[in-house]
Amino acid sequence: MYKVFIDNSVIDFLDSDQKTPSKGYDLVVNSSENDLSTLLDQFDFSLSRVCLLVIYDDFELAFNQVFHAYEFMDAAGGIVKCNRRYLFIERHGMWDIPKGKLDSNEQPWEAAVREVEEECGIKGPVIDHFLGITFHTYSYMGRLTIKKNWWYALNYSGSMDVQPQEEESITQAIWIEKDEWELIRSNTYDSILEVLRIAEDW
Image (cartoon, rainbow, N blue to C red; front, side):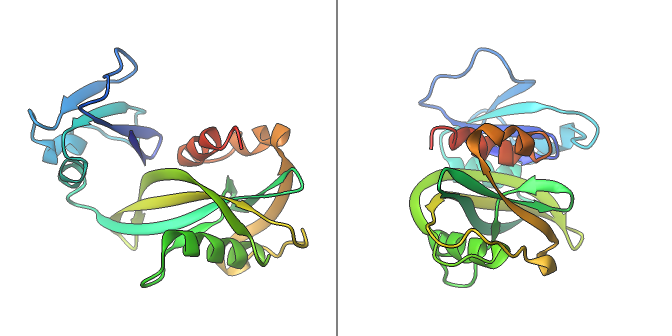
């Protein structure tokens, strides 16, 4: 299943070969039976919290139909662990995970390492494993944009001194233990909550 976060709402994309949940969605649509190009026009996501399910046979086809008016961007980032502590940042008053746009010809895992180093001022984090992918929408310079985020778990054994990247509006970077993650959950984005859920057992 793929998740796309729009403001406080979510659209789940589910393969037609998988079992469809019996409840929990405001609307369920099948891509083989519906024109998805007007799906987003039915809701004001800024005013209401909705949960939609799109059942697909071809993910890329269904995804592109729903978000045909959006520009696409690839980004990568990850949660860094060092001595039982995990690295998070505060940006625009919200807790976040270091991440950023892929450079030209850059692989997602390369971007994840680079962004962590740049945004937190540490050197040499190492990819442990791939966590998953989330999507979220936003407006960038007046253009509707959907960002695909590749998330990784990274190990680190260097100095825990951090230097938040102020030019990226990062006001602090902190190391906390897992039993303190509620601090992050209390003031973060739904897409970050999803990453924390995926990383819960790491």
